[in-house]
Length: 461
Image: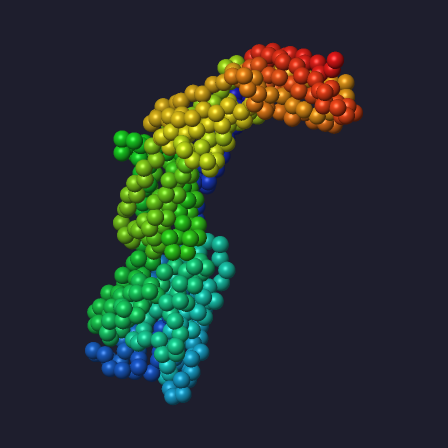
């Protein structure tokens, strides 16, 4: 009775352990979202705009926005300002400072520091963006976002577009958001990031909320791997998502069907465009895939596949690690090297095989069809035991159509015997001992190799 109770308890424990391990394995922590506000505090922000000065409206609307973010989890904020330390004139083009660095729960500090920001100087946007790249501490699981708020253009001969491109290429930040206050600067800032025109206070408030919504809202997608009939039946293949702009790898995952038999729903960052590579043989790729933040996106990729099985006509331990080079029909590039005794998936179409047997076997125009297994089998090889009284030179040649085709060169450092695995066929061995100094003393011997059998070949008079 005690044994039964013990076994039952152990079974329950193992089941619970496996379940918890599976749950722990499947649930990955979401990345920490870090948002850096880069605020224009140049002299022009003292200008009148609708109900108040631009700087006052920016303070008020940013403060209200920050109030709404106090309960948001898994997010950190920071504030960088430019044009606020030195009066203009003269023009000081390195006038920018990180006044509140990233830290948990620092929203009240940002709101307090906003009150003390006084517009004074010029507009070094490029330099401020460049310095912003250093504001994000090292992090393995973070998404870094810059929100630039400005009422003017670059005034220090910098290139905000080039700086933004460099930051994105290095993977420091995602594509920045720019909110232009007072008038439309889209032409100047479209190359910097995603531009929003805030022509009024209402539009400014709306732009802030849209940007935050896009930065924080989760977005789902599914990848439909289509077969030859345009149905999403293909699965269990690895996929890589690259940032289209920087070329950096963002996600690696193996395609899965959910419990209902549909492609699994995945959560990916909507602020990027993606180049997606499906690691079929050969791979399939789609570029510049974009998502709409907050909405579900279906991505269709055609990857019709069938199977190629390579096998020997019978099994024998004398044959080990036999492989075949697989090439796309008419191409010389090696696509894959497949082992005999395995079955591999390929995109439907025609392939050429070069079987690395001795001698080589070439099979062209092998057809792979949707959801079908194409089997290629070759005879079991035999063994030729080459006996020599001394080391020397020469080789083995396949006899075919009154012509000799080279197959194998003897190893001149092996004096007595060599054992060679050969495909069934008729061969001729030609040999001259190393100590013999006349070609006339060459020895030749014709022999036949049968499947699964051994043959002794004596190369001496």
